[in-house]
Image (tube, rainbow, N blue to C red; front, side, top):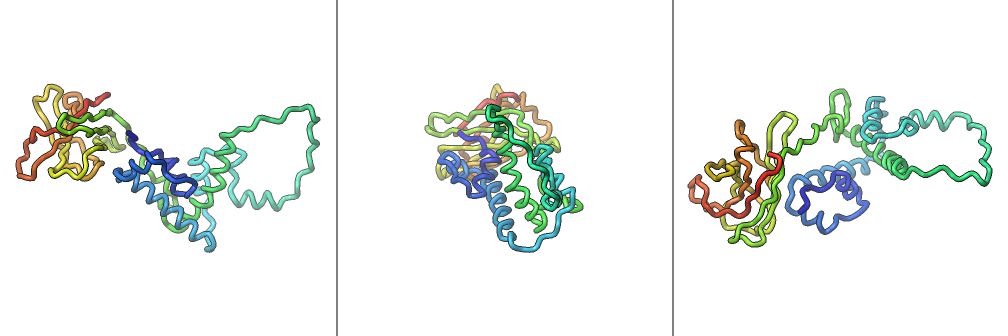
Length: 263
């Protein structure tokens, strides 16, 4: 089961360079996180294309510096458009003498060429988005400077179905956000339109205690781990079917359960 779509691949899909694979389509159908990321990338791409003919303000040098840093450009590719214009206006350098025919050509750095191609496309597109105000930051900063760092994965669990729920499966991942908050991301598969509520639990290894962390709405959900909960003591992630009867206790009807690795 795919955990989440690769961000770079989502960008390629958003630009229309290719269609999602069957696996990616299945994942996007049930993952609000990846669907939201794809929608945001498509919106940025569409707005930038719409503004292609509009007059744009010249971004300050700090904007281009951010673009260069994000794309990881080599020094020879770090020139801003203004620098490039000046270079075009400068007298042409004397032609160099071609090497002898028996000198082998220099090897092509495909990775560098790929980065350069991405730079030529993304730099004007992102600059346009920044000018339009789609992305923001203090003093005209751009979106990648204001993005929070990616969460840290602390533990993972493969969720296996119980006998009464054949075909049910899932994945649970514990992430730590930059502010120290821990969240459990649950992706559930093989459970179509259940009659009962789906509740997510953390359970002690010996099943002597359990803590509800929320109701799963759809196939994917994100739940905050209560402060003070030691995941080493509560390493089991459980999703249960709960009748809507007001009883907060576990119904005993578990759909899937898995042991966190790394907790």
